Each structure stands twice: as structure tokens, then as C-alpha cells.
Image 1 (tube, rainbow, N blue to C red):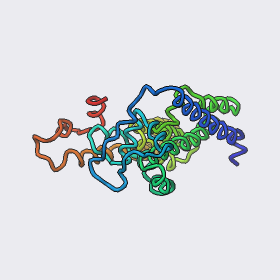
Image 2: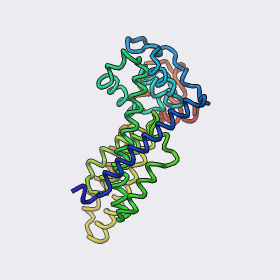
Image 3: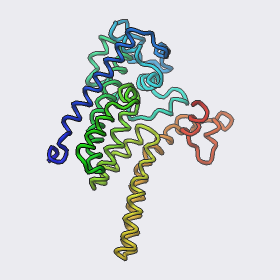
Length: 299
């Protein structure tokens, strides 16, 4: 059935895989030929809370190369996966990618810890998660394009452009973009397909990857307004319109829950149990939003 509805799906998946291999090959080549401008890979102090897993950098050549490729925001993702949320500013990075990295490092890639070191394994897991997520994101992008464009060839071309887009490096690095793209595009696809419950789950997961996932609730709001209008003015049923509005509101709230829960988690860790004069300014706000404070204060 999927092959009949989406005949280019396998080709899109293969193209996405080729684009990742090409990009990673170029990345390794340029890092071999040139000294990187970003030297943040060396920022690796000991964890504040000691653990047997919180090891120092690897002396293994492969492990060292992986660790040296962890730069910019990737340093934060690997650091948090290794040591947890140690500092206030780290709470700007949400849980989904970190949870995936931590899970893989303790299961599938656990045997490699003794070979290349724990931090290198965390970096490797980050690359694996981001690149695999991109493959599935490309497939869902193609499926969504077919539904919206209603043109198989145009959808296929759009998907190829997505695989080779100018920001492609971020989808293969240890960043949350790939996971966010997967669950955002996949969630919209399921919404367009009529699978609302799955759509809510996927769009909520997008909010576990990046804070702007909460904006995906707008898709449900838009659809709800259209359906409520049809119920009220075309079907002349005020009761049905109210039910539709309630249903849409509840689904939208579900998409907000991961972000709100993470703010509550940060508030609990940073604000609770402290005297008023020890509290950070955002803790005393009427609506204590940690994310907004971090963005304005640190970034």
C-alpha cells in the first residue's frame, strides 16, 4: 500500500542515506586537511558529580577524533548526557536527544566504552541518532509533500532538495534539528492523514527536542477553527462545534505539556529549597519561565 501511494519512498530513503555519507565524508576530509576554527572540543572539565562513567578523554586515536569533532552546541549535548544538568544555562537544551544518546551509550554502544572512552561513545551515539533521524525525516517529508502537493514528481524533487539543503550539516551533527524535523514533519503528516492521536504524540515529542515544538499546536488550532466553523455554520450544530473546540484545545494542551514539564523540572532543581535572597531573579517571577531567562541572559 505504501509503495503504491508513495512510489519514490525507497529512492528518497537511499538518497537521504547517500547525502549523509557524502556530508560526513566531506566533514572528515576538511577536518583532516584544515585546522578547525571552533576549538570548543577541548572544553571538557570533570563532572561536578563524580561517577565511574564520567571518564576523562580517550587516548585511543579513533576516540580522540570523535571527541575533537564535538564542537559548538554539541559540546553541551555531550556534556549533559555525561554529567547531567549541572549549570543553569544548560537547561536550554531539551531532553529528547540527550535521552536517546544516553540510552544508546548504555545499551547498543556500551561495549565500545572500554575501547574508545565514554565521551567518545556519547559523541558517536549523537551522530548515529541525528543521522538516522534525518533518514526517517526525509521519508516523512516526501510523504507529506505527496499529500500537500498532490504531485508525485514535485514531491520527489522537493524531497531531494531537502536531503541536500544548505543547512544539511546541522542534520548530521550532534544537534536536535534532525529529531525535531522527524517528529514535526511526521506529526503534520499524521495530522493530514487523519491519525490525530498519533499526530498529537509526534508533535508533543517535537516539543521534547526543541522549545519551538510548542508552535506545532498551531496546526491543531487551525484545523479546529475550520472544523468548528463548518459545524456551526454549515451543519448548524452549536453542540458539535463546542465538542470540536474542546477536542482541539485538549490536543493542543498535550503538545504544550513536554515544554511546561521541563520548565517545572528546571524550577524544581534550581529554585526550590532555597532562601529568597539566594533565588535567581526568574524564580521570583509571576510565571517563572527558565527558558526565556536563559535565552535573554546567556544567548
